[in-house]
Image 1 (spheres, rainbow, N blue to C red):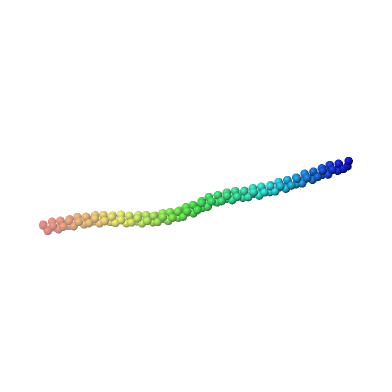
Image 2: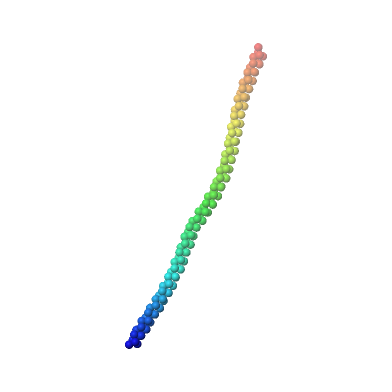
Length: 132
């Protein structure tokens, strides 16, 4: 009777050992699968992160390039404005000089008319003196 009990105990022990072995084996497979999934998730997250950084940096790079272009245009426009301002000042000075010259010509004409009238008066006075 001890024998069947030993067989049962042996088979119970064997079954328990088999269950422990199966459990350990399943746990190891699950651990490997979990580690593999974890590594894949980390790699996927890194790829997504890299793509997001590249997308954002691409926009930032475009903005930086556009900012540099705008700054260059501002400098060019500033120099053009300064050149036009100097040219306008020169034209204004020339306009004032012409205006003054025209005024002087008008003053000279008035002087000439006055002189002509004076000469006519003197001539008429001389003719009157000569006739008398």
